[in-house]
Image 1 (tube, one colour):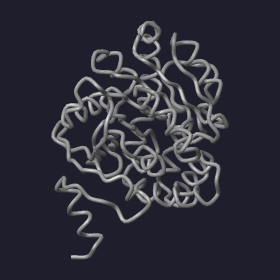
Image 2: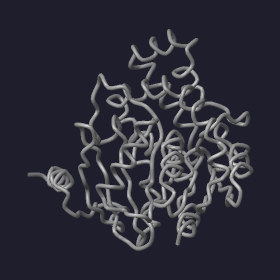
Image 3: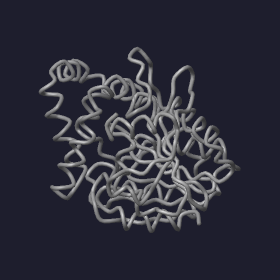
Image 4: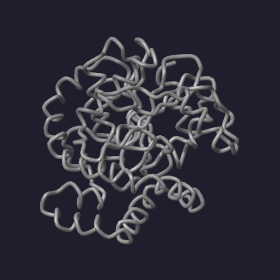
Length: 303
């Protein structure tokens, strides 16, 4: 058995392991969490304080947080892949929805026994799941953190070009043509996701890591995009609940994101009384561009 195979085997059995990279500073226990006949892949990093549950959006997975997690050493941290993404199961004929992602977060919190000290950390498309879970479980929520994400209708938001293509009905034929051509699909992915990061070297490495998984994640990407407009419409009806939410809320956005931009961050801040706003250097992937600065914000979000 090779070293790589041995590491993979340990991950699947839930044993603690230490990766032979910079992430070696943060050992984790891997879990397979049952969810509606499938399994979700999660990493549980031991530490103190309310658990920071770091959630990805699309088109990415838990590796989005690879640069951030080492800076959070000593704090209880959980990362996981939503159904259809990363190492979680990927049923091809499944209808993936934002409402289901809230249920997946609940399954992770229950299986890992996070109790009443959960801090959902939303990024990008995980905003609806994190916010709705917090609204539905305020007594279990120690805090809520929003990173370059969305929830309700906001005029400040500028949808990424690829998301517009795959979420708006008038572009359905174009989306299908792109998806049918692997070369065009790869070009669009690298162009779009490449615009989410600042540093060329980091961008190159992160793109290579995330693209490795994306071809198998396409069914989830397409399905969630089809659900996107309906989900935002439904969540807009819950804005009054969000305005009345009393748990600590921290808003930390990469200030140079051209899409889920500083205007969106300020709109969230105005919407949620008592929320804390931090604009950090970087673009859409603030956890990639500014991991050390973001870690300081997270560690103070719910001490």
